[in-house]
Length: 99
Image (cartoon, rainbow, N blue to C red; front, side, top):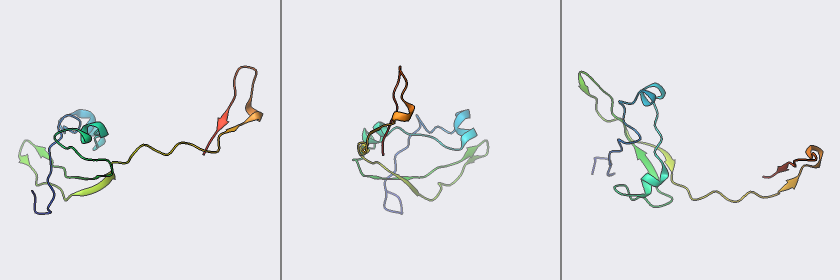
């Protein structure tokens, strides 16, 4: 437990800062399936608090302040107002639009 009252787990498979792609983009993506499984075991609707740490040949930085940039949401609502776009219909295809 940290001073902010939140427990953190390391995720080094998808967010290992030694990977060139992560260094270049300064971001990483963790699949929701990973967050739902051990060691995280977060339920749907959980807020995701993340901290990052920089490191180089001189050592590690302190952890960043916690950021809350995401919520594990449920599946999206189904599309509605499905409409055939007759002006774009051809003998071999049709176009549909939805909201």
